[in-house]
Length: 541
Image (cartoon, rainbow, N blue to C red):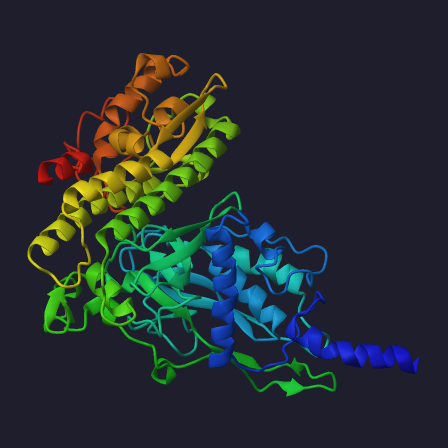
Protein backbone atom coordinates (compact mmCIF):
# COMPACT_ATOMS: atom_id res chain seq x y z
CA UNK A 1 0.00 0.00 0.00
CA UNK A 2 2.83 2.39 0.90
CA UNK A 3 4.56 1.56 -2.40
CA UNK A 4 1.40 2.41 -4.38
CA UNK A 5 1.03 5.68 -2.48
CA UNK A 6 4.65 6.57 -3.25
CA UNK A 7 4.11 5.98 -6.98
CA UNK A 8 1.02 8.24 -6.95
CA UNK A 9 2.94 11.01 -5.18
CA UNK A 10 5.77 10.77 -7.72
CA UNK A 11 3.35 11.00 -10.64
CA UNK A 12 1.34 13.94 -9.30
CA UNK A 13 3.69 16.67 -10.66
CA UNK A 14 3.54 15.09 -14.13
CA UNK A 15 -0.24 14.95 -14.04
CA UNK A 16 -0.50 18.60 -13.02
CA UNK A 17 1.71 19.74 -15.92
CA UNK A 18 0.14 17.46 -18.53
CA UNK A 19 -3.20 16.26 -17.30
CA UNK A 20 -4.21 12.81 -18.50
CA UNK A 21 -7.41 12.88 -16.49
CA UNK A 22 -10.65 13.80 -18.20
CA UNK A 23 -11.19 16.39 -15.47
CA UNK A 24 -10.13 20.02 -15.79
CA UNK A 25 -8.17 20.71 -12.64
CA UNK A 26 -7.07 24.34 -12.11
CA UNK A 27 -3.74 24.20 -10.29
CA UNK A 28 -2.41 27.61 -11.39
CA UNK A 29 -4.79 30.52 -10.72
CA UNK A 30 -3.52 32.85 -13.44
CA UNK A 31 -1.83 33.01 -16.81
CA UNK A 32 1.67 34.49 -16.54
CA UNK A 33 3.96 35.79 -19.27
CA UNK A 34 5.87 32.54 -18.97
CA UNK A 35 2.65 30.63 -19.69
CA UNK A 36 2.09 32.81 -22.76
CA UNK A 37 5.61 32.06 -23.99
CA UNK A 38 5.06 28.36 -23.39
CA UNK A 39 1.75 28.53 -25.26
CA UNK A 40 3.58 30.18 -28.17
CA UNK A 41 6.14 27.37 -28.20
CA UNK A 42 3.30 24.84 -28.27
CA UNK A 43 1.81 26.56 -31.34
CA UNK A 44 5.23 26.92 -32.99
CA UNK A 45 5.86 23.18 -32.70
CA UNK A 46 2.53 22.35 -34.35
CA UNK A 47 3.11 24.93 -37.06
CA UNK A 48 6.51 23.56 -37.98
CA UNK A 49 5.05 20.06 -38.28
CA UNK A 50 2.32 21.32 -40.63
CA UNK A 51 4.84 23.33 -42.66
CA UNK A 52 7.07 20.27 -43.07
CA UNK A 53 3.99 18.23 -44.07
CA UNK A 54 4.59 15.84 -41.16
CA UNK A 55 0.90 15.97 -40.26
CA UNK A 56 -2.17 17.29 -42.03
CA UNK A 57 -5.05 17.27 -39.56
CA UNK A 58 -5.82 18.60 -36.10
CA UNK A 59 -6.08 15.09 -34.65
CA UNK A 60 -2.94 13.65 -36.27
CA UNK A 61 -0.88 16.72 -35.37
CA UNK A 62 -1.94 16.61 -31.74
CA UNK A 63 -1.15 12.90 -31.61
CA UNK A 64 2.29 13.44 -33.13
CA UNK A 65 5.64 14.24 -31.54
CA UNK A 66 4.99 17.92 -32.39
CA UNK A 67 2.65 17.98 -29.37
CA UNK A 68 4.57 17.75 -26.07
CA UNK A 69 1.39 16.39 -24.46
CA UNK A 70 0.88 13.60 -27.00
CA UNK A 71 0.02 10.33 -25.33
CA UNK A 72 -1.57 11.96 -22.28
CA UNK A 73 -5.08 12.35 -23.71
CA UNK A 74 -7.82 10.14 -22.28
CA UNK A 75 -10.04 8.17 -24.62
CA UNK A 76 -12.93 10.16 -26.05
CA UNK A 77 -11.13 13.43 -26.88
CA UNK A 78 -12.29 14.30 -30.41
CA UNK A 79 -9.43 16.63 -31.49
CA UNK A 80 -11.54 18.42 -34.09
CA UNK A 81 -11.67 22.13 -35.00
CA UNK A 82 -12.55 24.26 -38.02
CA UNK A 83 -10.94 27.66 -38.72
CA UNK A 84 -12.84 29.65 -36.07
CA UNK A 85 -12.64 26.87 -33.46
CA UNK A 86 -8.91 26.26 -33.87
CA UNK A 87 -7.56 29.14 -31.71
CA UNK A 88 -10.02 28.37 -28.93
CA UNK A 89 -9.47 24.63 -29.12
CA UNK A 90 -5.68 24.92 -28.95
CA UNK A 91 -5.87 27.51 -26.15
CA UNK A 92 -8.30 25.33 -24.20
CA UNK A 93 -6.25 22.18 -24.75
CA UNK A 94 -3.09 23.92 -23.53
CA UNK A 95 -4.89 25.43 -20.53
CA UNK A 96 -6.28 22.02 -19.55
CA UNK A 97 -2.89 20.34 -19.82
CA UNK A 98 -1.27 23.02 -17.68
CA UNK A 99 -3.96 23.44 -15.04
CA UNK A 100 -4.80 27.00 -16.12
CA UNK A 101 -8.09 28.94 -16.07
CA UNK A 102 -10.23 29.11 -19.23
CA UNK A 103 -13.19 31.29 -20.14
CA UNK A 104 -14.87 31.96 -23.47
CA UNK A 105 -17.43 34.33 -24.90
CA UNK A 106 -20.59 32.26 -25.04
CA UNK A 107 -22.54 34.72 -27.19
CA UNK A 108 -22.16 37.96 -29.14
CA UNK A 109 -24.61 40.45 -30.66
CA UNK A 110 -24.34 43.29 -33.22
CA UNK A 111 -23.08 46.55 -31.76
CA UNK A 112 -25.58 48.62 -33.70
CA UNK A 113 -29.32 48.08 -33.93
CA UNK A 114 -30.41 47.21 -37.44
CA UNK A 115 -27.00 45.85 -38.40
CA UNK A 116 -26.63 42.66 -40.40
CA UNK A 117 -28.52 39.88 -38.60
CA UNK A 118 -25.69 37.49 -39.49
CA UNK A 119 -23.25 38.30 -36.67
CA UNK A 120 -20.37 36.83 -38.69
CA UNK A 121 -20.46 39.83 -41.03
CA UNK A 122 -21.83 42.79 -39.08
CA UNK A 123 -20.81 46.17 -40.47
CA UNK A 124 -20.12 47.74 -37.08
CA UNK A 125 -18.85 44.66 -35.25
CA UNK A 126 -20.17 42.81 -32.20
CA UNK A 127 -20.11 42.95 -28.43
CA UNK A 128 -20.07 40.18 -25.84
CA UNK A 129 -23.44 39.19 -24.35
CA UNK A 130 -22.45 36.08 -22.40
CA UNK A 131 -19.47 34.23 -20.94
CA UNK A 132 -18.72 30.66 -19.92
CA UNK A 133 -16.12 29.94 -17.22
CA UNK A 134 -14.34 26.67 -16.58
CA UNK A 135 -14.43 26.55 -12.76
CA UNK A 136 -14.46 23.62 -10.35
CA UNK A 137 -17.28 23.40 -7.82
CA UNK A 138 -17.56 21.65 -4.48
CA UNK A 139 -19.01 18.66 -6.37
CA UNK A 140 -15.97 18.21 -8.59
CA UNK A 141 -13.90 19.46 -11.52
CA UNK A 142 -15.48 20.12 -14.95
CA UNK A 143 -15.31 17.42 -17.61
CA UNK A 144 -12.53 18.50 -20.00
CA UNK A 145 -13.73 16.18 -22.77
CA UNK A 146 -17.20 17.69 -22.74
CA UNK A 147 -15.76 21.21 -22.74
CA UNK A 148 -13.32 20.62 -25.62
CA UNK A 149 -15.52 18.29 -27.66
CA UNK A 150 -18.73 20.29 -27.40
CA UNK A 151 -18.94 23.40 -25.25
CA UNK A 152 -16.13 25.51 -26.71
CA UNK A 153 -16.65 24.55 -30.35
CA UNK A 154 -20.41 25.14 -30.05
CA UNK A 155 -19.98 28.58 -28.48
CA UNK A 156 -17.24 29.93 -30.76
CA UNK A 157 -17.36 30.88 -34.44
CA UNK A 158 -15.95 33.59 -36.67
CA UNK A 159 -18.37 36.13 -35.11
CA UNK A 160 -16.45 35.65 -31.84
CA UNK A 161 -13.49 37.50 -33.39
CA UNK A 162 -15.48 40.42 -34.81
CA UNK A 163 -14.76 42.70 -31.85
CA UNK A 164 -12.14 45.43 -31.48
CA UNK A 165 -11.21 44.29 -27.98
CA UNK A 166 -11.65 47.47 -25.95
CA UNK A 167 -14.09 45.93 -23.44
CA UNK A 168 -12.05 44.65 -20.50
CA UNK A 169 -14.53 44.46 -17.59
CA UNK A 170 -17.73 42.53 -16.96
CA UNK A 171 -18.47 40.82 -20.26
CA UNK A 172 -14.92 41.37 -21.49
CA UNK A 173 -13.58 40.26 -24.87
CA UNK A 174 -11.50 37.11 -25.20
CA UNK A 175 -8.91 38.96 -27.28
CA UNK A 176 -7.22 42.35 -27.29
CA UNK A 177 -5.57 44.16 -30.23
CA UNK A 178 -1.79 44.36 -30.06
CA UNK A 179 0.80 46.87 -31.14
CA UNK A 180 2.78 45.86 -34.19
CA UNK A 181 6.17 44.39 -33.32
CA UNK A 182 8.09 41.16 -32.87
CA UNK A 183 7.51 41.01 -29.13
CA UNK A 184 3.72 41.29 -29.39
CA UNK A 185 2.89 39.64 -32.74
CA UNK A 186 4.33 36.21 -32.11
CA UNK A 187 3.51 32.49 -32.06
CA UNK A 188 0.02 32.17 -30.58
CA UNK A 189 -1.20 35.52 -31.91
CA UNK A 190 -4.47 35.32 -33.86
CA UNK A 191 -5.09 36.83 -37.30
CA UNK A 192 -8.69 37.69 -38.07
CA UNK A 193 -9.86 38.38 -41.62
CA UNK A 194 -13.25 40.16 -41.38
CA UNK A 195 -14.32 38.27 -44.48
CA UNK A 196 -14.73 35.25 -42.26
CA UNK A 197 -11.36 33.53 -41.78
CA UNK A 198 -9.17 32.99 -38.72
CA UNK A 199 -5.57 31.81 -38.40
CA UNK A 200 -2.94 31.32 -35.68
CA UNK A 201 0.62 32.62 -36.08
CA UNK A 202 3.38 30.04 -35.53
CA UNK A 203 6.47 31.75 -36.94
CA UNK A 204 7.93 35.20 -37.65
CA UNK A 205 11.09 35.25 -39.76
CA UNK A 206 14.01 37.67 -39.51
CA UNK A 207 12.91 39.36 -42.73
CA UNK A 208 9.51 40.20 -41.26
CA UNK A 209 7.42 37.45 -42.81
CA UNK A 210 4.55 36.13 -40.68
CA UNK A 211 3.45 32.51 -41.08
CA UNK A 212 0.25 30.94 -39.76
CA UNK A 213 -1.68 27.71 -39.52
CA UNK A 214 -5.40 27.44 -40.16
CA UNK A 215 -7.93 24.64 -40.16
CA UNK A 216 -10.86 23.72 -42.36
CA UNK A 217 -14.24 21.95 -42.12
CA UNK A 218 -12.65 18.56 -42.89
CA UNK A 219 -10.26 18.99 -39.89
CA UNK A 220 -7.26 19.56 -42.16
CA UNK A 221 -4.50 21.95 -41.14
CA UNK A 222 -2.64 24.11 -43.62
CA UNK A 223 0.05 26.76 -43.31
CA UNK A 224 0.31 30.09 -45.08
CA UNK A 225 1.96 33.49 -45.15
CA UNK A 226 0.41 36.79 -44.07
CA UNK A 227 -0.26 39.02 -47.10
CA UNK A 228 -2.97 41.48 -48.23
CA UNK A 229 -5.34 38.52 -48.59
CA UNK A 230 -6.04 39.35 -44.92
CA UNK A 231 -7.82 42.67 -45.35
CA UNK A 232 -8.06 45.72 -43.11
CA UNK A 233 -11.51 47.09 -42.29
CA UNK A 234 -13.58 49.29 -40.00
CA UNK A 235 -11.86 49.06 -36.58
CA UNK A 236 -14.87 47.75 -34.66
CA UNK A 237 -14.86 44.68 -36.92
CA UNK A 238 -11.64 43.74 -35.15
CA UNK A 239 -9.56 42.69 -38.16
CA UNK A 240 -5.85 42.03 -37.82
CA UNK A 241 -3.68 40.79 -34.99
CA UNK A 242 -4.97 39.98 -31.52
CA UNK A 243 -3.79 38.05 -28.49
CA UNK A 244 -5.77 36.05 -25.98
CA UNK A 245 -6.55 38.11 -22.91
CA UNK A 246 -4.68 36.62 -19.90
CA UNK A 247 -7.06 35.17 -17.32
CA UNK A 248 -7.03 34.92 -13.54
CA UNK A 249 -9.13 32.89 -11.14
CA UNK A 250 -10.22 35.20 -8.32
CA UNK A 251 -11.64 33.93 -5.03
CA UNK A 252 -10.86 30.25 -5.58
CA UNK A 253 -9.79 28.11 -2.64
CA UNK A 254 -7.04 25.50 -2.92
CA UNK A 255 -7.97 22.06 -1.60
CA UNK A 256 -5.65 19.40 -0.19
CA UNK A 257 -4.94 18.07 -3.71
CA UNK A 258 -3.63 21.44 -4.91
CA UNK A 259 -6.73 22.20 -7.00
CA UNK A 260 -8.56 25.52 -6.89
CA UNK A 261 -12.28 25.25 -6.18
CA UNK A 262 -14.87 27.95 -6.86
CA UNK A 263 -14.13 31.58 -7.58
CA UNK A 264 -14.62 33.68 -10.70
CA UNK A 265 -12.47 34.07 -13.80
CA UNK A 266 -11.59 37.63 -14.82
CA UNK A 267 -9.66 38.97 -17.77
CA UNK A 268 -6.65 41.28 -17.55
CA UNK A 269 -7.46 44.97 -17.97
CA UNK A 270 -6.17 46.66 -21.09
CA UNK A 271 -4.24 49.14 -18.96
CA UNK A 272 -2.26 46.23 -17.51
CA UNK A 273 -1.38 44.78 -20.92
CA UNK A 274 1.94 46.11 -22.23
CA UNK A 275 1.12 44.98 -25.77
CA UNK A 276 -2.37 46.52 -25.96
CA UNK A 277 -2.65 49.07 -28.78
CA UNK A 278 -5.08 50.40 -31.41
CA UNK A 279 -2.18 51.23 -33.73
CA UNK A 280 -3.06 48.64 -36.36
CA UNK A 281 -6.52 50.20 -36.73
CA UNK A 282 -5.66 53.92 -36.79
CA UNK A 283 -1.94 54.01 -37.65
CA UNK A 284 0.98 55.29 -35.58
CA UNK A 285 0.10 58.74 -36.92
CA UNK A 286 -3.71 58.77 -36.53
CA UNK A 287 -5.93 61.07 -38.52
CA UNK A 288 -6.89 64.08 -36.34
CA UNK A 289 -10.49 63.63 -37.48
CA UNK A 290 -10.56 59.99 -36.39
CA UNK A 291 -10.89 58.51 -39.90
CA UNK A 292 -9.17 55.12 -39.70
CA UNK A 293 -8.61 55.05 -43.46
CA UNK A 294 -6.58 58.26 -43.29
CA UNK A 295 -4.33 57.13 -40.46
CA UNK A 296 -0.68 56.81 -41.52
CA UNK A 297 1.97 54.20 -40.84
CA UNK A 298 5.30 55.97 -40.48
CA UNK A 299 8.66 54.23 -40.23
CA UNK A 300 11.74 56.36 -39.67
CA UNK A 301 9.99 59.41 -40.98
CA UNK A 302 8.66 57.76 -44.16
CA UNK A 303 4.99 56.87 -44.76
CA UNK A 304 4.38 53.30 -45.94
CA UNK A 305 1.25 51.34 -46.68
CA UNK A 306 0.03 49.09 -43.90
CA UNK A 307 1.46 45.82 -45.22
CA UNK A 308 4.89 47.29 -45.92
CA UNK A 309 4.91 48.84 -42.45
CA UNK A 310 4.00 45.53 -40.80
CA UNK A 311 6.88 43.79 -42.49
CA UNK A 312 9.34 46.51 -41.52
CA UNK A 313 8.48 46.50 -37.82
CA UNK A 314 8.35 42.71 -37.76
CA UNK A 315 11.86 42.37 -39.24
CA UNK A 316 14.81 41.65 -36.99
CA UNK A 317 17.00 44.73 -37.42
CA UNK A 318 16.99 46.70 -40.66
CA UNK A 319 14.81 45.00 -43.26
CA UNK A 320 16.74 43.61 -46.21
CA UNK A 321 14.66 42.20 -49.04
CA UNK A 322 15.86 39.60 -51.51
CA UNK A 323 13.35 39.96 -54.42
CA UNK A 324 14.03 36.43 -55.68
CA UNK A 325 13.44 34.93 -52.25
CA UNK A 326 10.25 36.98 -51.94
CA UNK A 327 9.07 35.63 -55.28
CA UNK A 328 9.66 32.06 -54.11
CA UNK A 329 7.89 32.68 -50.80
CA UNK A 330 4.85 34.26 -52.46
CA UNK A 331 4.53 31.45 -54.97
CA UNK A 332 4.93 28.82 -52.25
CA UNK A 333 2.06 30.47 -50.39
CA UNK A 334 -0.09 30.47 -53.53
CA UNK A 335 0.76 26.83 -54.12
CA UNK A 336 -0.49 25.91 -50.65
CA UNK A 337 -3.73 27.79 -51.34
CA UNK A 338 -4.26 25.93 -54.61
CA UNK A 339 -3.69 22.53 -53.04
CA UNK A 340 -6.04 23.51 -50.24
CA UNK A 341 -8.62 24.40 -52.89
CA UNK A 342 -8.24 20.91 -54.38
CA UNK A 343 -9.34 19.46 -51.02
CA UNK A 344 -12.31 21.85 -50.81
CA UNK A 345 -13.54 21.12 -54.33
CA UNK A 346 -13.11 17.39 -53.77
CA UNK A 347 -15.27 17.64 -50.65
CA UNK A 348 -17.98 19.34 -52.67
CA UNK A 349 -17.80 16.67 -55.34
CA UNK A 350 -17.94 13.84 -52.81
CA UNK A 351 -21.06 15.41 -51.27
CA UNK A 352 -22.83 15.12 -54.64
CA UNK A 353 -23.88 18.78 -54.66
CA UNK A 354 -22.58 19.14 -58.23
CA UNK A 355 -25.14 16.53 -59.36
CA UNK A 356 -28.08 18.61 -58.17
CA UNK A 357 -30.10 21.09 -60.18
CA UNK A 358 -28.97 24.67 -59.78
CA UNK A 359 -31.17 26.69 -57.38
CA UNK A 360 -33.37 29.31 -58.98
CA UNK A 361 -31.48 32.08 -57.22
CA UNK A 362 -28.05 32.70 -55.78
CA UNK A 363 -27.81 33.19 -51.99
CA UNK A 364 -28.59 36.64 -50.66
CA UNK A 365 -24.83 37.08 -50.38
CA UNK A 366 -22.45 34.56 -51.92
CA UNK A 367 -19.69 35.28 -49.38
CA UNK A 368 -21.73 34.55 -46.27
CA UNK A 369 -24.54 32.07 -46.53
CA UNK A 370 -25.63 28.78 -44.99
CA UNK A 371 -26.35 25.18 -45.90
CA UNK A 372 -24.78 23.64 -48.98
CA UNK A 373 -23.55 26.95 -50.34
CA UNK A 374 -21.70 27.83 -47.13
CA UNK A 375 -20.19 24.35 -46.92
CA UNK A 376 -19.13 23.85 -50.53
CA UNK A 377 -18.96 27.16 -52.42
CA UNK A 378 -15.58 28.92 -52.62
CA UNK A 379 -16.09 32.65 -53.38
CA UNK A 380 -14.11 33.85 -50.36
CA UNK A 381 -11.32 31.33 -50.87
CA UNK A 382 -11.14 32.29 -54.55
CA UNK A 383 -11.13 36.00 -53.70
CA UNK A 384 -8.08 35.49 -51.46
CA UNK A 385 -6.39 33.64 -54.31
CA UNK A 386 -7.09 36.53 -56.68
CA UNK A 387 -5.63 39.01 -54.21
CA UNK A 388 -2.51 36.83 -53.90
CA UNK A 389 -1.88 36.89 -57.65
CA UNK A 390 -2.61 40.62 -57.80
CA UNK A 391 -0.18 41.20 -54.94
CA UNK A 392 2.48 39.09 -56.69
CA UNK A 393 2.36 41.43 -59.69
CA UNK A 394 2.24 44.53 -57.49
CA UNK A 395 5.23 43.43 -55.42
CA UNK A 396 7.27 42.61 -58.52
CA UNK A 397 6.64 46.11 -59.86
CA UNK A 398 7.65 47.63 -56.53
CA UNK A 399 10.83 45.55 -56.26
CA UNK A 400 11.99 46.52 -59.75
CA UNK A 401 11.17 50.20 -59.20
CA UNK A 402 12.88 50.32 -55.81
CA UNK A 403 15.94 48.49 -57.08
CA UNK A 404 16.31 50.84 -60.05
CA UNK A 405 15.88 53.82 -57.70
CA UNK A 406 18.81 52.58 -55.63
CA UNK A 407 16.84 51.51 -52.55
CA UNK A 408 19.52 50.05 -50.21
CA UNK A 409 17.01 47.64 -48.62
CA UNK A 410 16.74 45.68 -51.89
CA UNK A 411 19.46 43.03 -52.02
CA UNK A 412 20.22 41.86 -55.55
CA UNK A 413 23.59 41.25 -57.20
CA UNK A 414 22.54 39.92 -60.61
CA UNK A 415 22.55 41.67 -63.98
CA UNK A 416 18.82 41.69 -64.85
CA UNK A 417 16.29 41.64 -62.01
CA UNK A 418 13.21 41.30 -64.23
CA UNK A 419 14.71 38.36 -66.14
CA UNK A 420 15.76 36.63 -62.92
CA UNK A 421 12.32 37.19 -61.36
CA UNK A 422 10.72 35.68 -64.45
CA UNK A 423 13.06 32.68 -64.30
CA UNK A 424 12.21 32.20 -60.62
CA UNK A 425 8.50 32.50 -61.40
CA UNK A 426 8.65 29.92 -64.18
CA UNK A 427 10.72 27.51 -62.10
CA UNK A 428 8.44 27.74 -59.06
CA UNK A 429 5.17 27.51 -60.99
CA UNK A 430 6.34 24.44 -62.87
CA UNK A 431 7.20 22.75 -59.59
CA UNK A 432 3.81 23.58 -58.07
CA UNK A 433 1.63 20.87 -59.60
CA UNK A 434 -1.76 19.74 -58.37
CA UNK A 435 -4.31 17.28 -59.71
CA UNK A 436 -8.08 17.19 -59.74
CA UNK A 437 -10.34 14.25 -60.54
CA UNK A 438 -12.76 15.02 -63.36
CA UNK A 439 -16.37 13.95 -63.69
CA UNK A 440 -15.40 10.71 -65.43
CA UNK A 441 -12.89 9.73 -62.77
CA UNK A 442 -9.84 10.74 -64.79
CA UNK A 443 -7.10 13.01 -63.51
CA UNK A 444 -6.12 16.47 -64.76
CA UNK A 445 -2.81 17.98 -63.66
CA UNK A 446 -2.28 21.74 -63.54
CA UNK A 447 0.37 24.04 -62.16
CA UNK A 448 0.20 27.44 -60.49
CA UNK A 449 0.71 29.35 -63.75
CA UNK A 450 -2.20 27.41 -65.27
CA UNK A 451 -4.21 28.56 -62.26
CA UNK A 452 -3.17 32.19 -62.85
CA UNK A 453 -4.32 32.05 -66.47
CA UNK A 454 -7.61 30.44 -65.41
CA UNK A 455 -7.99 32.54 -62.28
CA UNK A 456 -11.19 34.37 -63.27
CA UNK A 457 -12.68 31.26 -64.86
CA UNK A 458 -12.53 29.18 -61.64
CA UNK A 459 -16.15 28.64 -60.65
CA UNK A 460 -16.99 29.27 -57.01
CA UNK A 461 -20.44 27.73 -57.56
CA UNK A 462 -20.70 24.23 -55.97
CA UNK A 463 -23.47 23.18 -58.36
CA UNK A 464 -21.07 23.26 -61.30
CA UNK A 465 -19.09 20.27 -62.54
CA UNK A 466 -15.54 19.94 -61.24
CA UNK A 467 -14.14 20.89 -64.65
CA UNK A 468 -15.78 24.33 -64.41
CA UNK A 469 -14.71 24.62 -60.77
CA UNK A 470 -11.17 24.50 -62.20
CA UNK A 471 -11.85 26.86 -65.09
CA UNK A 472 -11.65 24.39 -67.96
CA UNK A 473 -12.27 25.94 -71.39
CA UNK A 474 -10.90 23.49 -73.95
CA UNK A 475 -13.41 21.07 -75.53
CA UNK A 476 -11.15 18.17 -74.58
CA UNK A 477 -11.06 19.02 -70.86
CA UNK A 478 -14.74 19.96 -70.80
CA UNK A 479 -15.85 16.75 -72.56
CA UNK A 480 -16.29 14.96 -69.24
CA UNK A 481 -18.47 17.72 -67.71
CA UNK A 482 -22.12 16.66 -67.58
CA UNK A 483 -23.64 20.00 -66.64
CA UNK A 484 -26.98 20.85 -68.24
CA UNK A 485 -27.39 23.86 -70.54
CA UNK A 486 -29.02 25.66 -67.60
CA UNK A 487 -25.94 25.16 -65.43
CA UNK A 488 -23.65 26.23 -68.27
CA UNK A 489 -25.66 29.43 -68.58
CA UNK A 490 -25.30 30.06 -64.86
CA UNK A 491 -21.55 29.65 -65.28
CA UNK A 492 -21.49 32.14 -68.15
CA UNK A 493 -23.51 34.79 -66.34
CA UNK A 494 -21.60 34.46 -63.06
CA UNK A 495 -18.44 35.69 -64.76
CA UNK A 496 -19.10 39.23 -63.48
CA UNK A 497 -18.97 37.88 -59.94
CA UNK A 498 -15.84 35.85 -60.69
CA UNK A 499 -14.09 39.02 -61.86
CA UNK A 500 -14.60 40.63 -58.45
CA UNK A 501 -11.86 40.23 -55.84
CA UNK A 502 -13.40 42.46 -53.18
CA UNK A 503 -15.66 40.54 -50.83
CA UNK A 504 -18.80 42.56 -50.20
CA UNK A 505 -21.23 41.48 -47.50
CA UNK A 506 -23.50 44.49 -47.81
CA UNK A 507 -24.57 43.85 -51.42
CA UNK A 508 -27.60 41.96 -52.59
CA UNK A 509 -26.64 38.94 -54.72
CA UNK A 510 -29.73 36.73 -54.75
CA UNK A 511 -30.30 37.17 -58.46
CA UNK A 512 -32.10 34.77 -60.75
CA UNK A 513 -30.50 33.64 -63.98
CA UNK A 514 -32.60 36.12 -65.95
CA UNK A 515 -31.53 38.98 -63.67
CA UNK A 516 -27.83 38.16 -63.84
CA UNK A 517 -27.16 40.18 -66.99
CA UNK A 518 -24.06 42.06 -65.84
CA UNK A 519 -22.47 43.77 -62.85
CA UNK A 520 -24.91 44.93 -60.18
CA UNK A 521 -24.33 47.43 -57.34
CA UNK A 522 -21.60 45.86 -55.22
CA UNK A 523 -21.96 42.53 -57.05
CA UNK A 524 -19.55 41.94 -59.88
CA UNK A 525 -17.32 44.08 -62.08
CA UNK A 526 -17.11 44.46 -65.85
CA UNK A 527 -13.48 43.40 -66.33
CA UNK A 528 -11.07 41.34 -64.24
CA UNK A 529 -7.94 42.97 -62.81
CA UNK A 530 -4.54 42.40 -64.40
CA UNK A 531 -2.57 39.46 -63.01
CA UNK A 532 -0.31 38.88 -66.04
CA UNK A 533 3.03 38.90 -64.28
CA UNK A 534 4.65 37.02 -67.16
CA UNK A 535 3.85 39.79 -69.63
CA UNK A 536 5.02 42.46 -67.19
CA UNK A 537 8.37 40.80 -66.42
CA UNK A 538 9.01 40.15 -70.11
CA UNK A 539 8.37 43.83 -70.83
CA UNK A 540 10.92 44.89 -68.19
CA UNK A 541 13.78 42.57 -69.18
